[in-house]
Image 1: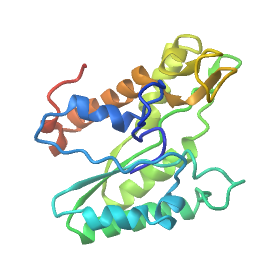
Image 2 (image 1 turned 90 degrees about the vertical axis):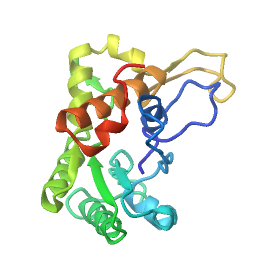
Image 3 (image 1 turned 135 degrees about the horizontal axis):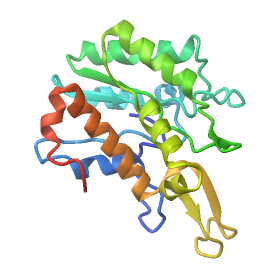
Image 4 (image 1 turned 60 degrees about the horizontal axis):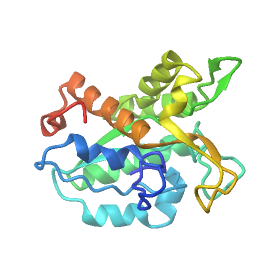
Length: 221
């Protein structure tokens, strides 16, 4: 469960992908991945729209639930999505964890992936407060945690402003009807970017010797 950086993109003619969409490509048939992530969702909106209840209704004992939000939670200009990093965001994450455990299922928290925002050649880690909030919730609730914020931001910073462009949406003019002037998007991933984030996730499970790691049979596509 999460936002557009993680969700399935049904229009395969357009290059945007969510990293949750690429995750099954690393997994063996022993793992059934159901992606409830959706574009534009925050913790608040995911719950208020009924998506959380839908997920809970399908949840079975022993299932794992991976949670990654943050990008839309920080949008103060949109009250339907905004969740304050000091109170609301940790509260929603804690509520999700409690509900999952009531179903005898197992939560996993992941911090938000990095936006590709460089200022004067230096990466601006503008989601680090939400990432840190997720980490603190994971520590408090004793939940497994994958720090995708650090993994992806460190990677982008090392790759550099120019070379990191290849992992995000950069489309030319006069190709897609929705974007006749073209589009440069430094939040949403293309196929390579989504695959790279999924790879980071899989490799961190292996590093942690997490029980789910045995269901991923490869680290490269």
